[in-house]
Amino acid sequence: MPINPNKLRPRQRFSALAIASKALARQPSWKPHWRDPEPKERYDVVIVGGGGHGLATAHYLAKEHGITNVAVLEKGWIGGGNVGRNTTIIRSNYLLAGNQPFYELSLKLWEGLEQDLNYNAMVSQRGVLNLFHNDPQRDAYVRRGNAMLLSGADAELLDMDGVRQFYPFLNFENARFPIQGGLLQRRGGSVRHDAVAWGYARAADTRGVDVIQNCEVTGFIQNGGRCEGVETSRGTIRADKVAVCVAGSSSRVMEKAGLQLPIESHVLQAFVSEGLKPVIPGVITYGAGHFYISQSDKGGLVFGGDIDGYNSYAQRGNLPVVEDVCEGGMALMSAIGRARLLRMWGGIMDMSMDGSPFIDKTGIDGLYFNGGWCYGGFKATPASGFCFAHLIAQDRPHPVATDYRLDRFVRGAPINEKGQAAQPNLH
Amino acid sequence: MKIPHPLLGLRDASEFVYLGDASMLQRPDPTAPTAPEKFHEYLHVRTNPAGTHRELWFHEYGDRSWLIVTRNTVTHDILNAELVTATGVRDAG
Image 1 (cartoon, rainbow over the protein chains, first blue to last red):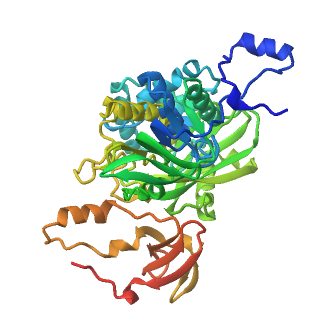
Image 2: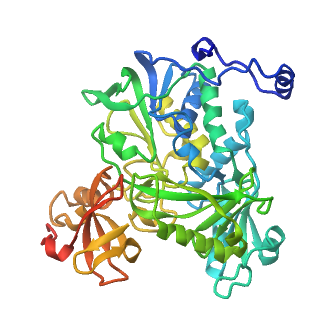
Image 3: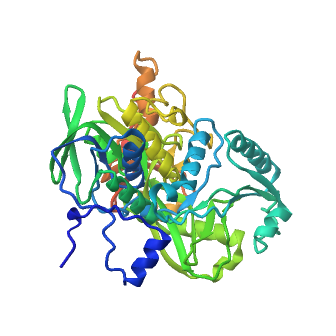
């Protein structure tokens, strides 16, 4: 007989003792991690989008602000969106004052995440190393490292021998782009992305949040400049506050509320090789092209590079960028040419006009927006949820997220890490 | 993706550089009283449609012409490509 998850409240805690005792009993009594509730007619807060950011927002609303009459509406299933389509890297190695304290908060939340959620998300602080290949790049990384240290993060500058100790197989002797050193953040690393979605969903559900899957938002109920709820594929749901958290589809969803955004949707491809024995202990980024790589716990080399560069909602890219990414890999470590590619995929990014995200109110009372994460949304998941919950509960931004405003372009206050123009495919 | 260049036939998209929404051809009037708001919208706000999109591609590794390409952003199907100079589009200002 199938288990009816609605009759169960997953209060079970994970511990070594629980796992061992249930293993001895042949695992009959594990329960579903969250309920499958029918949507109620109204909630205090409705969160549109059950990805990592939406679930984290629900968790912190319940835990930090005591708001538990909350629904998370997900069009598909939990873990089926960008939270399951990224390359799982966490780091806080940004430069600008509008960004770095936010990402450092995120890294601190990652460090306590598994205890907070009572869930094994395989947070692995294996180190993120950004390589440099010439003097100006070195100077830029010294400056960045100092900005990181000022925010309370860790940063170390490695010379060539320092890099060699970690990764002796890299191509140090490249005539045009010799590796001169790197900026190392030892507290950076990777996390099992699916477990992040599951852990947040379970933690939010345990505190009373309704996680509602297969529920597409088709419109916003507006009355006199106020948002009073949403129309969905499972009926009307009223709410005091509606919070949209659908990066990748932000323009499509906010258009239903009559809003246009400073965002273009672009496709980013990612790649996984066949499983190999341990070869890359941490995360490496190549400084002379756009290429980054790590190795998953299953042994696959996980790597990627540039976005394709044209507007797309297709969740798949084209071959010229595949070639460009693989050229970057070959230039950095030619051994990668011997590994066979197991799978590749594309994810849709909210590319904003300055490469930085938004956590803000909209011009419509009761409607809140979180998006524009470009290709950096995964690492931001805990702080994004933490700061969005703060904004929803208190109607003022969290101190580390005060600059993530929708009107920053009209005020001439973009947060532009790369110093590029308002050209999303260059960020 | 291959782009049907009106003069050169089917060309691989890797020969082109992408700029973005073709609405950028219509610059606002810089002398209008509403110019600051209009330029903000022109520079930063996008309709970003899922579906048919008119967009600017520059044939950098070809004849260095600007094209308006009509493309479906969900399927990557390219429906049309025309030279900007042939469309008669000029700055509104």
